[in-house]
Image (cartoon, rainbow, N blue to C red; front, side):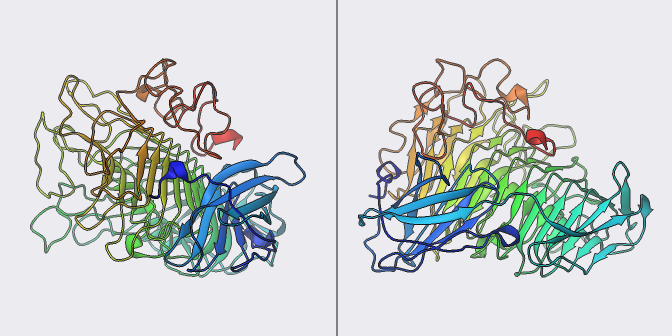
Length: 591
């Protein structure tokens, strides 16, 4: 039985040498008995670890401990997960400090010795070889970047301090900025009016896009809605690697996406899956990207399909955003499908601290074919599949049915977690930890709260959930006060696989088609927040449970995820009582 609660075993092995970091920063690797040399791949705040132990290895989990170089005390991290499909141990160390060298040790449970690794997180400080300063005012021609930096140094394209440079191509050019060179920073531009994409990335690596404002891009498709995958930032290159997108505002494409009640394709007689623009689109890249502290938003006349994601990503081994990537601290809103479409491989992908609202699905991970994937301390508020002309958001359409159904008092909203695995490829490990699902109050004259109708939900008849760990989450689903919740489902894996773990969650619905004994330490109740800390807090970062209420001091200790909790045990949900408020968007954490 592969239970997470049995995982944190101390394990073992050999030695180490350099792994590549952003902009050429290096770590270390070494030799471990019985397998290949372990490898570490850092970002600003995470380090992914890989060790090919071989398909004949005894398996089981591999303990990980770490410390800042020179420190005395070791800290425990989540164990590496053993993927018996290729004989590889994989996992990540989370919540690290940027620009810091870490000593790491790993040990499989069948080994006696620890193997040391050294890796340095990205600093976020870049050496600039040359600065290209654009003149202030409005520019009607696109910026084509064919000159980049040298190894370890960057070319900076920016504006004069205190001035504004707007590139408005007025629908006459495919993009506002085209980047065809590596080791480039684009900073502080206002980009408008691209015929297709705001920024287009070629076969590049080590590119930073920061503090830009991107809007008004995209084409109208034959169906009348926006052209699918026209994006604020887009790439079609499988060579894309180490792209940092930080503290940008990407908003209001030129055209709308259809919602789940609107027809989008002429050859289909019924409404269809949303079809239109996105804020960021790339797929099947080499990965090691970071998307952090951005604000993605629009209005209901110009909604996205997914806010960020990739085409065909659920069938891609690399998927979106690609291996060894982080997505965190973002304000995400304004789409008819997935707020964050983190689908495909999910190999050492980490997503945390995002606030998601006015989307159908909060976070989609259907499917996670490689893993492990870490989804923790995210907050999901409003869920909507359509807005009817009379403003009646109670009457919604389920994504599996293309005709409006369920007039009040029946309701079908979206999910917080849309999960599943490929029917053929099997699943990688997923960790869903300390996430919060809010239920904002209904508008005047309406009876239903505005949050999602299901917490963790399998999608498709063939997409079963395996290798998924759900701990310390709040799966608070939409319902009418006093309504029986027999048919309301908080957790629906669609399989009784004992490779899953569902426990220590706070939920108010039912659990459907899970293994026997699921949520043995879970709490079935409605969350009660400190005054001003619940759904009414909006995106202010205040989501702490009221002391003495269900879920307060009732979570499971998870190394490297809830270290430093207050009280007898960690609180369930994204917020820990006594912590500083969470911050999201372009000005988060001091910018």
